[in-house]
Length: 167
Image (tube, rainbow, N blue to C red; front, side, top):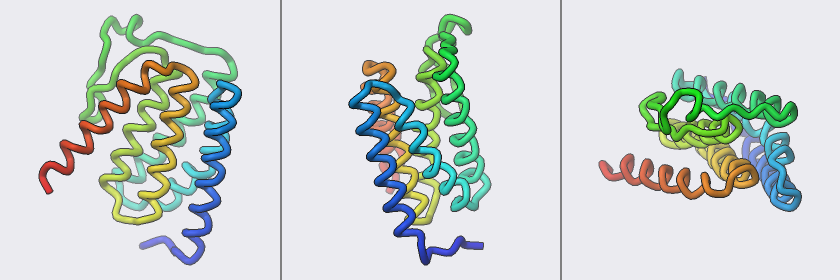
């Protein structure tokens, strides 16, 4: 059953403002934690709003990865998956995901899942929230590894072009 939309516009505006505050704070102090902490309400509301199996699963995975990201950063746990697995990329859920530092892979996975949410969801508010997540993930990655942002941006543009080429 569709979730009520009576307060959804106001909630999405407030969550967008929180995301912007987190983004600006993270950029000013070169630390991803403000963006991550202020993204939690957006992701929580996205979990609440999504209804389809793939979109609900994607939003729950984003929440889990976001919480794991906090643990990795706070406890300075940094594992290089490319070195550990002996390969530069891994095919995950239909996408070739670049491997590297685990703290960078988390937001990359969240960004990819937010693209999936944007494409697969019908709701205007869930699309809005997925854009908040996507943009914030770029900033999270940028504050940790600016070079990775360029690669992720190329991936996102190509994915959108591939999806909309059939329209």
